[in-house]
Length: 371
Image 1: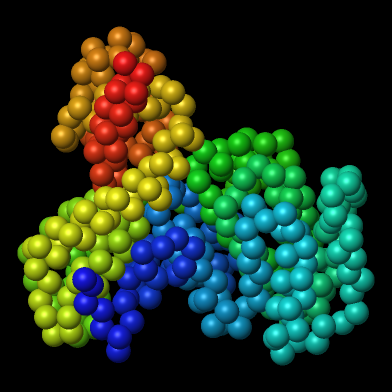
Image 2: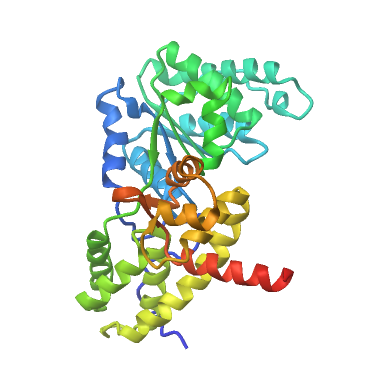
């Protein structure tokens, strides 16, 4: 049975879509984006954050949103998967202006134009000018507006937004764009005829965190909660995370639940937390991730899983029967997706915790079913 201290809130969050009380890393990203307020010519004025599920994309967006709001800046947040994304942006900007000290002047807002059945060109034109009318309320005061869009994909709504956003920049409005999405969703956006403008954005792939910093964050989080985690346990826990933020939250949350106030986290607590984290990674990350990859992406990862650590490209050539040039294309793709990391002399290693175990179990299950 879990021993949960009812007086102190668990600083870790083991679920997606919520900003954890305890976050880790990404200080450079946050500081660079915020620095735009002092330099509107910065390449970070339009930023797209990408990475696999659980790498901290949404947390980074929420952190930036809260920082900007604390500075009195109007923020408009939505997700690209929402059917009413454009409507959300219009209403969000209206509310943001109304909630500020600025006076919302009359602006003709017709949300009906965003309904299904209206042509994309007509929607784009109306959306652009409706937002522009609202931006006129803040332009004289030079109040910035930050548009934040999560779960970016190559949708009609994003095409409409991109066209309008480009026009607002050209008109001299103090607007910023912060987006986030999975790598395979971002790629067609950047290659799209209309949305290719976003290629000028700063593209930030969230790489694994430094494990030493992760260990320090474990220690700090437990100390702040009146509990103790020995340095060795914190280091072992950090190694298990492989610098993956969601894993940090999973292991931290379960160890925290298993430890009473003023108690010390034990190796057995970490063992139980690791088993829990593995199950959650299988269910919430890999079961969704792997079907989105190509057939040979899966072959590549499965053959890498034979090795506990680094894999030589020459070994992959031997195992798959494919030439190095062919394999190199998939190597580059999986590197760009953040699923593997590269080393010296053509070596590669899986980048995510328990991915090896998942691929091996999946391989065994598939062959048991079909053989």
